[in-house]
Length: 589
Image (cartoon, rainbow, N blue to C red; front, side, top):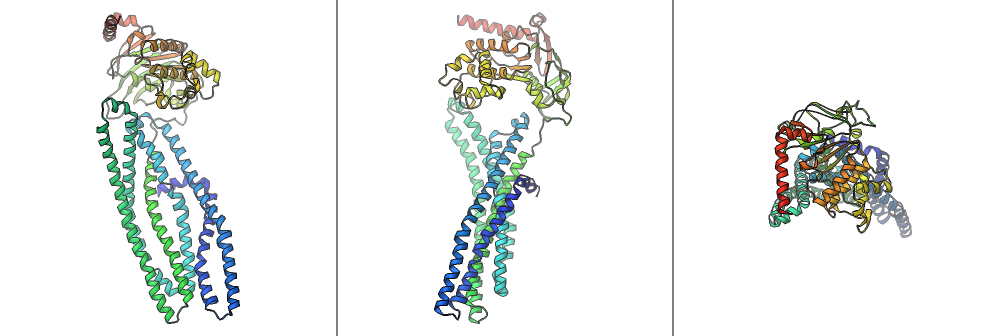
């Protein structure tokens, strides 16, 4: 019930249109209900009545003329608007649901996406939302219209003969028993099928993104077998639903076919005995169809609603996923920052079962200064910088910006002052201009070009076939690594943040690209508080302070010269890298 209550909130904005559609639907369903009564009148009063031939002809023409007006001229717009409004409401509700879900997933933390496959999230937003559409058109309209149609038909039948009416509906209780028993199982099967489909889509999403790996390891045949397992599981779940639907339809249709036999036998006997007229029997038989067609639709509606409710449950599971990171009610707005950052006895772990990623971190970064985080992989460098933007929340201690705990600042305001350039920056399909504008969508063409020039990207962009209008493909696949990095830097120039985070921004580039990007980064770092996560230590020797992390703890801090004189972990790592680079130069003079 709670699921339907939540769903009704999406329908509520359109309640006036729902009522209009229901009224139009009542007229639509009421018009055909007059047909058996017309047949009774024609048979009993015109064809078999004590009228002259001319009176019968005139009466027949009069009845058919009025019927044509009702069934053709009036019914056409009724049919059109009934269908149009029903689809309009359904489409708008699905539109609102998907928008709501998309807004919701934007607010979920990175932790959620680390624990859930992207393909499964997409499946819930697309497939499960689509499957839930029957709740509006069928559940909130058709069912009530079928009940209305059933009630009117029963009213006509009771008016003509109460005894034959009772005979006609004697099997109705069996419908209720069948629906009650069969559809509990159907909901469970449908939910399992949706989960199997989501798993297959999640797998497919990962593998499509990883096609280069599949090809490089010649795993095509292996991947085909793996996908076949997922596909087969979905097939089995789908066939279980199909079998249950087939069983349901077989039982319902068998029950339905009993009623006409009862009416023919009982009604024929009553006509022979003179208890009812032939027209009454014909009309009864016509109304029998008007009873059991809505009943069939109600049973089919039960099937659709059971499947739709199962999909709705999966949608609401996503919609009700709590936010790990959210604003406090009293969170402050921050329009300007100087850029001072403080880590005060910070402890952090990704979840309660994981070891501490950071332990008792105490660190102060003055405004406009550059610090570098170095150390072996897994030391906590990337974890530390991810906390500044509140991608995760810490368990102990405090992180402050300009003396304010970042948990007391609005997330949007905090992140608007932070720019990030990563080792593997994400670009979206679209043009180069579109991707640069992500830094600030309000900027004009001149500002975009200025940002590209500052990032040393303007020249290569201008040499592309369509310049700034060049389509770069998904994840910027049509660009080189260095080109993608420069667009990412241009994006940050356009954002103009006070705090800059460079997470191994040049570690995977060739020397020419690295030179161009280092030049762009030097301009970008000017007058900003900059935190560099460095893999190559030769690129950070001029930093104001270097922090050496091991096992989530700060082991050494100081300038390059100070740490070299200390002759500790940083000095050993630097000497090893320097020796390796010297050997490479000797081998490749």
